[in-house]
Image (cartoon, rainbow, N blue to C red):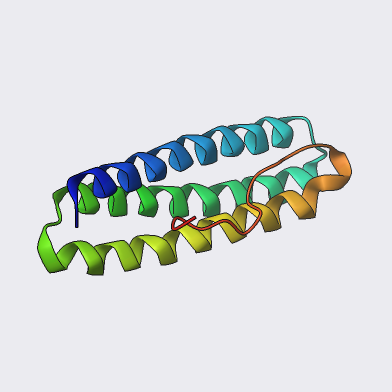
Length: 112
């Protein structure tokens, strides 16, 4: 893979991780202001999202270190992790949308 394409892909994933971290912070902030029952649900979803975000960070590290054929294998795994995180975040926000904002997800994938 050409270095420019590889670097652009890695930077795109890093930007998405930053976006997810900001969305996760919003979700946690909303949990603090929610009633007890809803707060438990917010916190459960936030913990799940944090786990998925951490997995994506690990994939990003692997991508940075991958070479040759291993790059394509690691990239495939990163795209699956990306999709799972994006879907989980979209689901969390749609679940809690009645209380306001949350605007991430949208089904985008890393190849776009």
